[in-house]
Image (cartoon, rainbow, N blue to C red):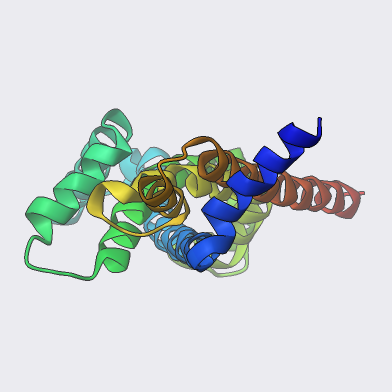
Length: 242
């Protein structure tokens, strides 16, 4: 038992203490959280716009007057549908590589590229989440907005969207957790995130077990922590409905 413990300590010292290699994990964790938070903001922004376009099309397109405006809106809705189909139908790692090697081939800002790639990917999923929230709002809410003198855009902005976001808030929080794990492929573009940090340590010590298990445990702790916060959020939202 003492030999096993001594071996464990030696392996721990080799991977994390010698050369202050633990700093790779700390800096990598910071990059992972930065990319995740910023990507979620981009995703919510893009997803909300796409959701409004899709929901407005479903609710209002048939009632719109024929003409240029209706045709233009149909084209915009078509573009939104193509965006959703392409982004949701292709792997995020492929999208990341396309952004890095093709779209932003001349840029060295790996964090920005990762944020845009993951944000655009997240936006497709957020868009469907928010659209479902908008469509779940009772039609009477829209009629109430019209009775107050609001036009369709004002009714959506002041009445429908706030209620829809409240309904889908737990789903958006879960999207953040999913996004947190998806960013682990950032190493494909040489971004030194948490997973890449563990790989760097492994490459220097030729010891795979300790750095990879450490990375897995850090992800597990973060996911458990944010899942707990999501659970509390859902509980508060349920209580506020009573």
